[in-house]
Length: 173
Picture (tube, rainbow, N blue to C red):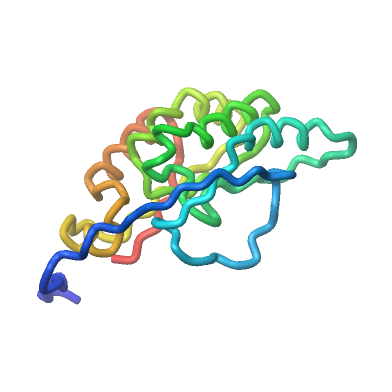
C-alpha cells in the first residue's frame, strides 16, 4: 500500500545450512506433482542429467514438447556455479534444437548461459522469466536469503533484453 513502510524483522535470521546430495536418476524428464519443501536447504541434483536427457531425446518416437527448468526449483541455485548441471542440460537442448522455458531468481548464472539461450532463441525455442519478489533489498534478504539481489535481477533482465529476448517477469510487490 502507498505510504506503508516495508516490514522488517526484529533480528536477522540465522544462516541456513545447505545439504547438497547427488541423485542418480534413471530418467530426466518428469512431471511435477508436488512443489515439495526445503527449496534452498535440501538440494538434490542429478549429476548425469545431461547424459540422460540426451538418451531420452534420442528415443524413437520421442515427441518434442516444452521442457520447463525452474518449475520445481530454481535451475540457477548458487550451487549451479560449481556443478554446471543447468548449463549441461541447455547444451543438450541446444544440440537437439529443443524448446525450453526457464523461470529463475538467478542473475549472473543465466547471463553465463546467454550464448546457449541466444542460439535457441534464433528459432524461438526459449522463453525466460525472472522472478522479482520485491525491489526492497532488505525485505528480499528476509524472504529469499540466497537469491540474487533485485538490482542484479534487473541488470540480468536488461542484458537479456538487449540481446533481443522478450522477457516475462513474475512479481509480488
